[in-house]
Image (tube, rainbow over all chains, first blue to last red; front, top):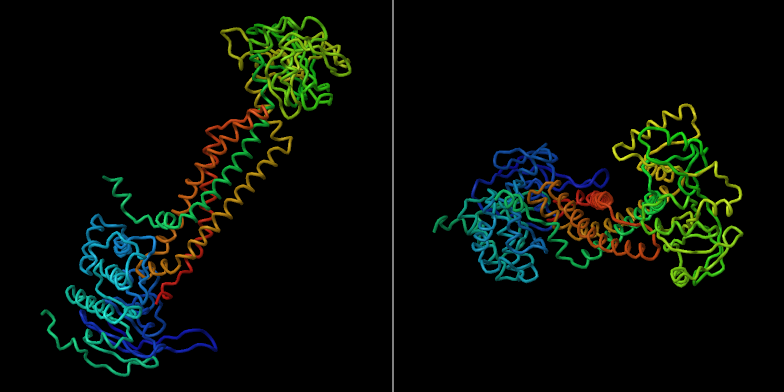
Length: 233
Length: 395
């Protein structure tokens, strides 16, 4: 994943406001990168640009060799299918069971449901430790369980890139810790790249690299605690 | 196996959402059912009016009908020269031909609730020894009419005539006023009311001329022609037309053509089609508004979920399919109860108004098509909001 000279503005005319300033960033495949900084510094904007949820205005965003600057809607959608999204809120569909929610991650690939969709979804639920909760609706699950279902949904199609936006914000300390640990473990096992926005100092141990942002610029980069740890214990 | 694959290809999200909010599903279904009911009743009444105008036609024992060129329908047929009937008898293939005299006349009602009120009846005069009607009950009683001043009473005349009718059937020969003269009821038969008149009285041709002083035997209203067994009605009708040559005062029609002619006249000349088509459109608008309200609310409630799905890689089209799926489900779910209630109301109308109202396959298909159109239209309008779901908003 590569950003070069990426700038972005919100609004138009008098109220136009620059949120990203000529950003350069390269994340090699398989790295787990945390993005930190005060709110409004442009972290989430980077996620939406990399994920293809917003059009690139200036500069270049390349994901898995594909250029997103000037991409049409179809290419943006193709890019979204390469990304697993984990949101601040779990954003599960309340009319669907956990298994069906996870299955939507497969259906989102645009080729309908594969014949083994249920099996794959259940396997992924087992990976996140929810094998016994496949038939529950979201109101029957705890906050941590919901976020784990959301992670299973993001990972089920095995996307090369995971984009997460403060996935622990709505969780208590221990649950948040477990959720990020789980995310890191699964991503590591499958060679997925992770870009995660977080305020949460309690989970920084799980990053390979920590990036500090301020006012639309990356002001500091340091290796995370996990970088020293062996990749395949 | 292949069908199973098709079914499994996508998660039936629209269905799941509707089932999940049962109250909303119930209201939407009721709305569609109500609209379907409205449309069925409008179309049913419209067809009933057309059908009631030709109920008498279907009772007539004739393959070919002669009427005046100015004829509108059976209730106001005009007159044509009796000599045409004599010409027709001479055409090969014609078995017999006889005249029918028709005119509306006021009488004084003898119903239980409105005794003494005036009302319009359709008076039909026929030679008592001619089998003008298919119904054997009428044929059997025609000889009673040889006595002038007597009539057969239509049991299906609108209103509560039960005691009056029973008096006739007991042979008490009750009397009332018809066109300023005394008429004696000597028997009952069954034809049915139409919107023009409340019922029918059958009299002999002689009685007819006594009650309708302006009418003469040489100017009948309807000529009834029967063809010989091995002849086809359309061919004989053409031969009669050829025999008339340049005389254009009389129309020659097969019975089916006459029925269509009368219905067509009514469709074109009256406001009936307009009024009921308007009612049907109102029914559709009611349905569209209710379904649109429900679908919009559902889309609104799921906007965050839709935005999430878009962020995950769902195309706009896939999500529009969800709304479309919901509208199809609602159209089917609403159509079935709407149809059942309509069938019930049709039965009530049939027995209370003695009018011919019936469900036809064509109407069933048409209304189902309208229900689907209605829901699809609402779906299309509600879909506009799905497009607004911005995947960048979910962060």
